[in-house]
Image 1 (cartoon, helix red, strand yellow):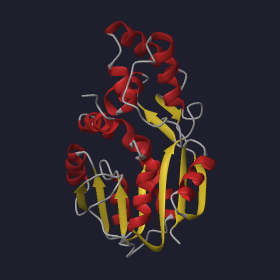
Image 2 (cartoon, helix red, strand yellow):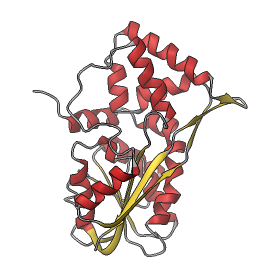
Image 3 (cartoon, helix red, strand yellow):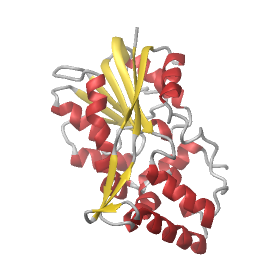
Length: 270
């Protein structure tokens, strides 16, 4: 049987928990204050973190005094979340339907970089709208374009030069579909939201060495990592060396500093 994109992503995240936390945690956390601000999360705001991963967004909402629930389809990610960020009601479930949650039961719903890993992203946005109370807000983040989110450019260009970018993966939406603010706002409108907004958030990925960039993508991501893990050993070596060489240009003061901006989009349920 051909593997579905959902199964492909699930398998990838089940094995990427620690590397993701170590390599991408400090990067993806940078968007969280912006998400919570546009959602006006405060004391008493009923909040749902969709595709919560290790629970970074849920934990930050809890710190603001919000009663928080969180959902993810990866049991391994949820185990990490419960250990690292306790005191939150976590549930294993599908972001594309949110069946565990009743209609009109949250004041705010957020999804931090989860939309990139869904086969039916607009089904997830529609589900987020369903569980929102009237007047509630939803928000999500996605990486900016490949050219702007330089970490992706380093890896994908190395694959094009030294590997095979055409290795078949399960059919999925384009990875950079939501890299433009206008596209995000259009998606929110199509899913029934009103007053859509979007902005680009500047972010910088700080790593200890150029070698960590390749390792982060190889072991700490699902889709890009899946493409890398399907290369031959010879191809992978060439890609590794190319990424290291390119990342060296971003070293300053003993650290690697790579621009990795994100697009934040949000809207309201009428």
